[in-house]
Image (cartoon, rainbow over the protein chains, first blue to last red):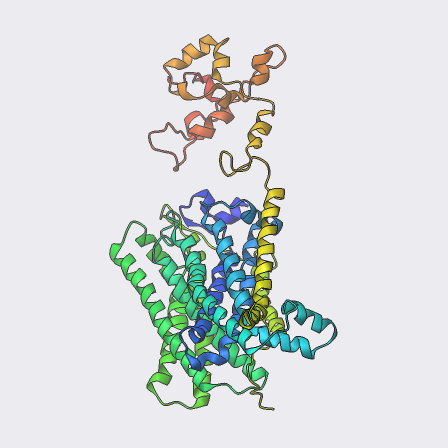
Length: 392
Length: 156
């Protein structure tokens, strides 16, 4: 075993550093959680800040956030094993463990914010569906309506008020959710690649970027599939917000980089070498050039030029996809990159990903597809279209 | 109850019911904690306090160097001036509780120097420079260390 591990090591490594303990599943965890926080923040734009143009994506964004949030803890449980023990985190909470406390942040966000907000927003639809359906379907909708049939204008007005209040709580909760993920990495003082107070903020903005990109793509793809008209005003607005968020995100990341370069502490040479060699493809090419600069440039085009609807759709599709790849690469570079160098700053190791192993590529792909399957069920159960804009 | 109050009651019934579900969830959680958290958890720290008692019940296998010194005063004396003075007897000889309780029944093991000494003294870049290290093959050519060095006072 050690022979094969040593073959992947260059220079000097401490024995416990040769093999990466945090796999691609730990890359998925901040990626998926970020999509949740970002999607929710896009939804709250409409609700709290009254950006009417993005209304068509409001419900889809909430359902997307829920679908991804349900999957968010799975990579961690697969990585740790013994998922049946995860309840212990709640029963005997360890207040000094950042990771253990994340369980409460997660539960708060899932139950008190997302599920409640979706329920309040859909209550009218649920009641109407319960009235018009029969059999098992009716029972399901009745259970979801908690057996209360009242959708009087006054009751819906109260729902709307409570929902708005929840969204206002929800925004800091979403910030907390993903800021916390950044904090888990940023607070590891033994690792100079992670340890920076900027980490929660960088994670948060990259989360917003990825969530907005995902909802924009989902909205366009789902509209195509269901033959609904894409509101250009909506995607133009989302594209603009995506660009703004991306510029802030990129600025923060560059701030971190410049700070590191100027500070040039004892870790800098080693990390700089790593970025220029082992992380060159995933960091310089995929994350920075194709995952950040190109999409920002693409998103700027509709702001600068008068482009046709078709061209803009193409741009948003391409920019959104590149954004998601770029943010995934960012999570990869943080999680995997942080384990490739020796704390002696004298050596580097290599990450070897399995395929059909517990933490291999296959389970990672399944975990990335799973939220879309959940979303499909959610969309069937709770259609996000508020008015019937179907073409045919 | 006025009509307005009745209306408010009717129009918030679903919210009250949802609050009830949350309250039931919290009660279930508290109930689960009472049932599932083991007794004594958290009394001294983030662990089950009676675990200390459970561990104390396990048979003791190490005797401690004071027990050795009761009979082996000569070794204690030999080690006094040596750099090995800080090393516990059982670090090399293994657990000796059985031996100290009945020396006739259980003999202490004399370790094989050729295997034991290199564990600490074979050359290794990860060890501090001041620490005595040798390249075994060059240093003794396979000769057992204790043919030149006395393990209890190895300085020549």
